[in-house]
Image (cartoon, rainbow, N blue to C red):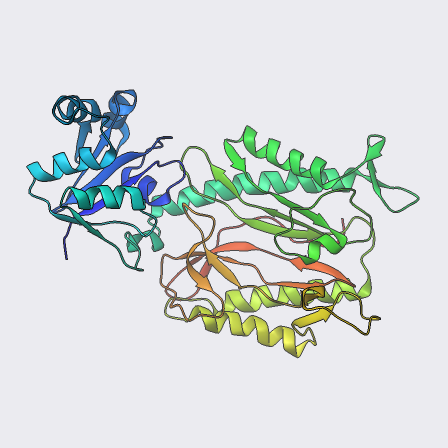
Amino acid sequence: MSDTLLIVADSERDANMLYATGMFVPDAFIYFRHRGKSAIVVSDLEIDRARREAHVDEVISMREIIQPLEKRLGHRVKFGDVIAAIFRKRRITSARVPANFSLVHAEHLRQHGIRVWTDDTPIFPQREIKRPGEVRAIERALRTTEAGLAAGISMIRAARIGKDGRLLLDGSVLTSERVRAEIDIAMIRLGAIGAHTIVAGGRQACDPHERGNGPLRAHQAIILDVFPRDERTGYYGDMTRTVVRGKATEALHRQFEAVRDAQRAAMRTIRAGIDGYTVHRAVQKLFEERGFHTGTVPTNPKSKIQKPKSARQQGFFHGTGHGLGLQVHEAPRMGGVSCRLRAGHVVTVEPGLYYPGVGGVRIEDVVLVTTNGCRLLSRFPVALEI
């Protein structure tokens, strides 16, 4: 197989392109690596900045390639034309591309006689093992995440409890939307962007990826899951806390303690060489031993006729954790599939329990896997009632 790697993407949304080049570019451009040397092809708009910032061996002007091609081809030049022209000069006839490579580009390159291929292995497997600078970047993102959580929880704590159980702040109903805005604004001030921040209360908290909407109520669990991207580095933070304004039920207290103990059990299990599935099983085992079973329940238990879509999940029905870095969800995964943990992995640890009649509880922190265990990178306190 060819030792040439080719990527055509923008680096604001494509984590591999950002990892390869180290600079943010909003529009698609060309990166290739051949015989150990890397190069990018960019427009005049980006070329001066690329020469300063890009972590590559060569920066090529797109204009200098396009102008002679337009005269020769007599039509609008495409990415495939540019790549083919460069590859011909370097006698490159094939290249590996990432799995998300555009089919349009691939077909155009084949028309030029250049073969592209891909497989299901990562093009940058080294992304999994975080270098010290990457760990620091994640820690910086986590500090911002914690500032967002603090702002949101402070708002909930400051609310008073209305006669109908709704939370009130400054004379109006406190909603998921208001708290989410407070969290996101706090993080923007520190240079990070929160996308799809979760503030979900009551029954909404029983759906792990429900963003939450409408009034928040007292004495019910409210899940806040915050995962901003640092604008300077592109690395993510990710943390979750569950809080109650007022008094939690005894059942919710038991659920909360089980989740907290499960997270501690997972962290005691994590170390280099352990299978992520073993960590996940430790969490599942603790929940089962405490009587927190997982399965589906009918949405209307009194009905004798239940349609398949009317049942919903309850218990612990997601993974224990995932890798964190230039993507909020990346390898490795700690769940139902075998995956060996290695020193340098940065992973979330986020067990949760969800029962529509009681509420949803999730606690999420981030750890660095080490040879003998793991190091906690999160610093935010854990408390249920506020």
